[in-house]
Image 1 (cartoon, rainbow, N blue to C red):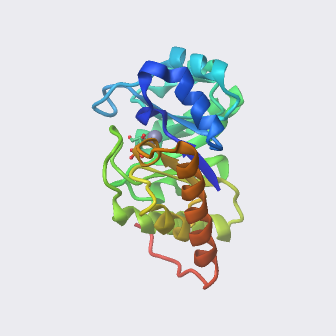
Image 2: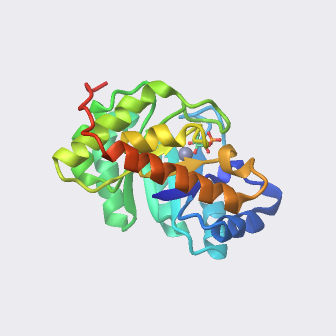
Length: 233
Ligand code: DX5
Ligand code: ZN
């Protein structure tokens, strides 16, 4: 189980302190949302911020590009110290060369799927990627409610991963809380991004521990009976 708190929900007035707090809380990765004001109607961090964050932690940086022109951003973010870079499958024909470029840059390769996009769109890329990010809210903002209709997509991706013996991580992002993490873990998710669900708690350490425990318990429960193979959606 990987727990990846999202920097989006941190206190930006004390960024270094927040990043260190995430590491001390026992989190595995730090998720960094890059929004360009075009692919999504919001703006966040550039490569300069990622480079600054890189200086204060050894945690893997999970960089999620919600950007219309990732072509011009892969190299700057790789150079800034990103460990995983995720691009969106909604970019269509441009996805394949983007994945090749990421591989060449030496970062781990991620692919994200928005809630309205069928999971079948990601299928042919699965052998090429290290991380599949199933968005569980429409990207752009933290603090939104989990979209339950995305769960069959997690199940389908997990079923493909099993059947084809692939080894990408299956990440969920958006509205992940103590209430929703179990449903995702039961469906096969193993990597959990959480912003407001973690930073909103009094103790980040206790919250990370609790989220991890809930995910692990549900994953076990999900593994026990033979999981039905859902229809692709
Ligand atoms: C949403 C971002 C998420 C966001 C999640 O567009 O991709 O990573 O930080 O925030 P919460 O956990 O608050 O839904
Ligand atoms: Zn994200």
